[in-house]
Image (cartoon, rainbow, N blue to C red; front, side, top):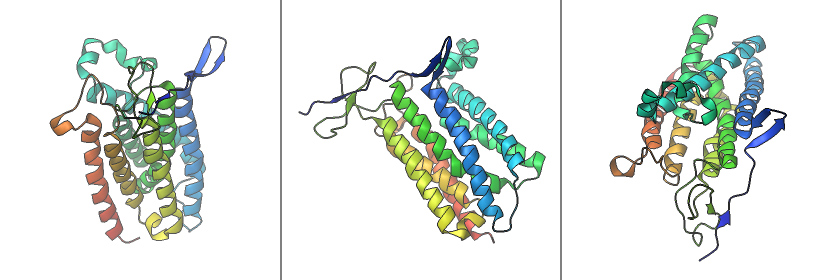
Length: 273
C-alpha cells in the first residue's frame, strides 16, 4: 500500500500586522469579489462594443456593494437554515459570529439573486443581462474559496486508498485515514473548469451572449452538476450525515439548480436575441 501524502502545514493567517490578522478565507472572498468586479467591467464592455450599452462602470461599482451584502448575508443565513437550524435556534447570538466559520454557497447564491433582482428593479437594468454577467464571474470566487478551504484544512474528502488515489492525504483533525482532497476537486470543477466553459461560450459564440439568460442557465446547471459529482468524494457534514440512498445535503440543494438551469437555457435560447 502506498504511503499517503501529509497535509501541508499552511498557516490559516495570510498576513498579520500587529493585532490585525487577515486570514486566507477572508482574502479569498475579497479577491474573488474584486476580481469578479473587474472581470464584469470587461465583459460588459465587450457587450457594449456590439452596440448594447446596458450597464455603466459606476453602476457595476454600486452593484459590487449589493453583491457583497448578498454573498455574506445569504451565505450565512443559508448555512444557519440549511445545515444547523437547531443549533442556532438555541444559540441565536452565534448567527453573527462569522469568524467561527459556516457559509453556504446555495444560501449565498440566493442572496446574490435577491440583491440582483432588487438592484435591477431600482436601476432599470435588464435582469437576465446582469445575471449573465454575475454567472460569468462567480466561478472565479468559487475557485478561490475552495482553495482557501484547502489551505484551512477544512471540508475534506472521504477516506481513500492511496494505492488507488496517490494524492490522498491525511488532514489534521480528520483522523489518521488518508482522504480525497475534495476541496481541490471543487476548485477545479466548480471554479476553473466552469469559468473556462463560460468564457469560451461568451467569446466564441455571440449568439449565446446576446440571448440573455443562457449563460445564467449554464452557470447554474454547471455548478449543480459539478457539486453533485464532487459530493461523492467529499465527507458529509458530521452533524447531518447523508439522507435517502446516501445523498448528501449538498446534492439535495444542487439538484434544483441543475433542473432550473437546464430549463432556463432552453427557454432563453428560444427567445429572439
